[in-house]
Structure formats: structure tokens, C-alpha cells
Amino acid sequence: MPSPVHSAADLFGIEPSVPSVAGQRFNAKLSRLLIADGAGFATRDVERLEVTLDGVPGDRHEGIARPADSRVPWYPRGTPIRNSRQVTILAPDELMEMARRLGVDEVKPEWIGSNMVLEGVPRLTQLPPGTRLHFPSGAALAVEGENAPCRHAGAAVAAFYPDSEGMDVAFVKAAKGLRGLVAWVERAGEILAGSEVSVRVPAQKLWVR
Amino acid sequence: MPSPVHSAADLFGIEPSVPSVAGQRFNAKLSRLLIADGAGFATRDVERLEVTLDGVPGDRHEGIARPADSRVPWYPRGTPIRNSRQVTILAPDELMEMARRLGVDEVKPEWIGSNMVLEGVPRLTQLPPGTRLHFPSGAALAVEGENAPCRHAGAAVAAFYPDSEGMDVAFVKAAKGLRGLVAWVERAGEILAGSEVSVRVPAQKLWVR
Image (tube, rainbow over all chains, first blue to last red; front, side, top):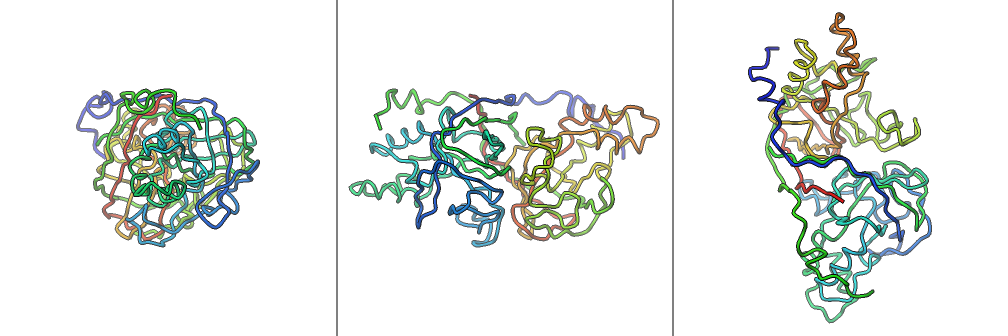
């Protein structure tokens, strides 16, 4: 292998000045814990869940794999892909702003499939992929990323406001950046409503080609 | 639920000015494809792999789960955790710089467990978590993140330079930010050495609490 033709400073020594942030760690509170174990989209409160590497047992999004859907149109519909959307996480302040934008009193987390309501994380939806959430039992989740709002969730909200025509479509825009996160289980264990959550945000550095 | 006490502008309308980058998409080249199917750490070239959601069949890092190790000291050693380190990816320019820092002629990717050598991705090791790599067959990987250099890999390099005392330890520092990525299989399929790879980098926005 030849020696580098550029000096090290050209290649790596002087990095382009890209914005970066060191890793962050803080506590948040799991104010509600929910499961989608009914017929539809909605979730209901539970005191306790025992999550596994497959996700939330009995939940509609349980599975180590899932069939590709319209969220991943680059895969043929139905193709098994690894399930990185096992758990849906929402924040109260973001839901409040979503309601304001929609011109309604409230959007309840259980209407749009929330498994967890997390308090104390500003701009929850923007937490970077790879963030870990650690629970007191040792159970842990890894954040896949932002949950892009879809018309199905919009229709679920609209069902509670029968006079609001077109809200299913309006939701897609109004909920952008506010619809929370999806995550997968990294380590199995018990999760209790009301518990503390240790949030670990990895170091971030913007990558530009 | 009460109305917001702050105006929307306070809460969400005027976002703090945090640096961000839109999603990026470009092609790279898979110049080499390798497997760790021997006794140790090293990999060997293959023309073709059929990856599954478990990873690379027969590879030392195959598995939908893996036992927790020193990389994740917050989990008790041996606890099963979901395996997001199925595939190791390196870049030729970063290996060259690593060799320069170590004062040696070269560091071969097969010495330190590389499954893929990817050309055409500047600062490969810094690609953000959540980046997807799509192969012509439809197979796809999701980037977990930077592969932090460890003494085991350093010892593997040192074995080729018997006169370089302490290189296993020196490697940990010299290879920082240059040791490539680890990734997991999102969609199964065939991967061929020499093929094009479509790289999709998600939108990035620095998150600061």
C-alpha cells in the first residue's frame, strides 16, 4: 500500500469545522406505560410490562421482525425487515402543541398508539437515533428515530372530534416533529409506570459529504 | 388538559437555532466483502454473502442477540442484548491514516475483523447512526455507529509488527474515529463484492438538552 499522497493535515489532521455535541446523560420520568393489545390502534394503561427482545408481549408491534409497509417504500410491501419500531414514545408538551395546531382541546397519547409517555425530555421527537433509555430493572430501549405522522393516526384523533373534517390529513402536517419516537428493546426486563428513566444521548457530529 | 401557558412561539414556534443537515443520498462502492468464519478475529475475502436478519451466516458476530461485553459495561456481562454489531465496515483512507499514526506501512482490514470495505464515503466512521446501506439485491444494513477501537484489535495489528512494543494499547488511541462502523441487517439478501451501495443518511439536527 502506498504512502498517503496528501499530508495528514489535509486528510484528517485539520477537520472541517462541523458542529458537534458531546454525549449527554440525564433522568426523565416514565409517567405512563401503555399497551396496544386490543383490536385496533389504541393503547391502554398498564402498571407494568415485561419487555423482551421481541418488544412488548401481546402488543400490536411485537416482533423481532415486521413486514415492510408504506413507511419503508424502498422495500417490497410485506418483506420481513428487522423491527426497529417495537415501542412508541410520546411527550406531553409535544402532544399539547399538536392539539393547539389542530385547534382541539387535547390529543391523548392512547389515541395514537403510545406505549410510553416520557416527561422531562425537551424536544423528545428530535432525540437522535441511537439514544438509549435505561430503566431501573436493567431493561433498555434504543431509539430508532422520529415517528413520522401518518393518516391512520390522524384518523384515530379525528374520531374523537367528529366535526373536524379533514383532520386525518391535517394531522400529518400538524404532528410533524411532535409525534414522538419509535424504539426497540436492547435488553429485556421489567418496566414500571412512574419509574425514573436514565437517558443517554450519544455524542453527535453533523456529517456532510 | 389545560391550555398551554406559554405561547406557541415560546414553546415550539421559534426553535432554538440548532445546526441541522438535510437527508443525503449517494452511491459508494463495496470494494471488498469478507467473513470471520475461522478460529479468530481475522476475516477472509468472499465473492458473495447471503445475509439474514441474524447477520452474516457463519460469521463470528452472527446472531439476532449477543452477550453483553465490555463495550456495554452498564449491562451485566453475558446478558443477552439485541445484536446491533453484526457487520463491521471499514474505509481504505481511514485505514491508511491509522497506519500513519501507528508508524507502520499498512493496517489491513482483514486483520481487524472487517466484513466490508467501502470506498467513496468520506469520514466513514462518522456517518450518523440510522444511516442505511442498500445493496442491488435489496439487502440493506442499518448503521449502529462508530466502532470504538479496542486492545483486541490492536493486538491483532501488533501481531504483524513484532518489533512494535505496546502497539495494542497505542492502537486504541491511534484508531479513534478511524476504525469504521458496526451495522445490523435490516433486510436479508445477497451481497456481492464489487457492487454499488446506495447510502442514505437521515436528516440530522443536533440535540442539546
